[in-house]
Image 1 (cartoon, protein in one colour):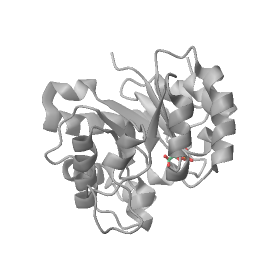
Image 2 (cartoon, rainbow, N blue to C red):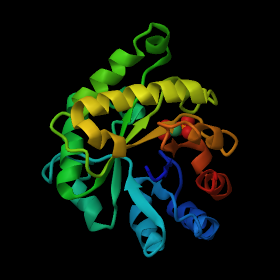
Image 3 (cartoon, protein in one colour):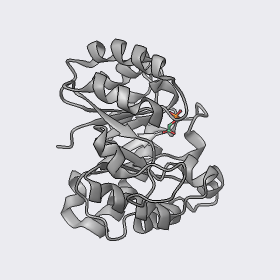
Image 4 (cartoon, rainbow, N blue to C red):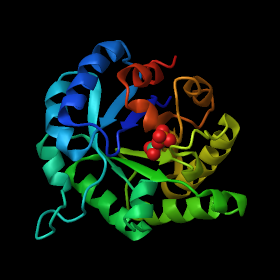
Length: 246
Ligand code: PGA
């Protein structure tokens, strides 16, 4: 049985004050959700504060990106070791916004995953196709390329995969549970090609306009093991409803 995994990706939202208010409201609302892994990914500036507030709770902390070098003259960058130092357990790598706006390719994503795992961070590895790719029948080719490239020489431990069709991110257009299941099954087949039976233990999250209203149906699908939530994770009330989907 795969334990559900529900993560909030706050992107470039929330000051430290807003982070503080969210966590104060959120923790009591999810304190009895012990059969689900819960993760918050605030922006870098809120991580130390969030680490303190989440200590001893049932909620883990994630960053949204890292640089792959351990340290050095890389102005503006943050390393995996720095995140471990402040009490972070996970990092999101390969989000489509990083790929699209910051030119991250599969090779960079692969280097970042390696660096994160070497430092002991869990990795939420994101993949997904554009609307043109889906309509052009290229979804499987894209997923194969992203999975094989991103996970080259990477072990499956402490790894979570997030399938996020780009056309569903922030658009209000959720993939139907059927489309999500069909693509998740394909992702799992690719993971099996890399990891054999260990692929059965990997959580594959769905991301793209997940809301309190659609999470339960998505979670009925056999290969949908959780969610990576953007917009609907910004309010404690709506994200706690998603976490408490059962
Ligand atoms: P969304 O974002 O829930 O706002 O569509 C999901 C994501 O980008 O991780």
